[in-house]
Image (cartoon, rainbow, N blue to C red; front, side, top):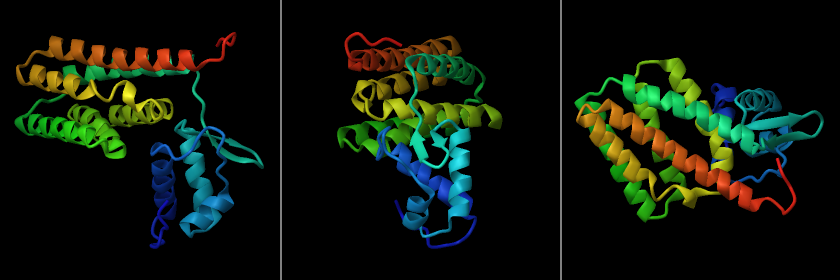
Length: 221
């Protein structure tokens, strides 16, 4: 993690730094984050760190155990399925209600080009950021900030499980994104919705199958 040098809005800075640390996949589910460790790493007092951890817990990224510390939240297959169900419904709504402009289409096309380039370079962290950015651009085009916030939170929680399974969907996402952009450009809302649903369902099925394959024999959820 980067040491925070400027003591301005420390809770937000601590939150952003810890969140980035988590989403970059630098922790496993057994890793423990303590206020002492984080405050020493960031060079700030424990108070803003505590507030940042509480915010991350409220967003579903971590769980805090009293007198022990914070751990990554472990999502069950049922929770993952429910998150993807919610995401599919919201993103289908997004492609139907987004205000499609030439500026938006240009930004989406640029995003797809960056995704392909980053995928080819095997630049996992930046590819993930660009993948999330593509969906965020569409959500922002609805003008519904609450929807953007909810979708962003869902993306973060899903990534807790997807961060170790990057190769499951990274190769197909740019193709789906490209097809969605073309459908929007042609004004084909039905096709854009169908592609978005197929895209999300493909990722979900691969992720759930991967998790099932990792289960010890005889263990069920």
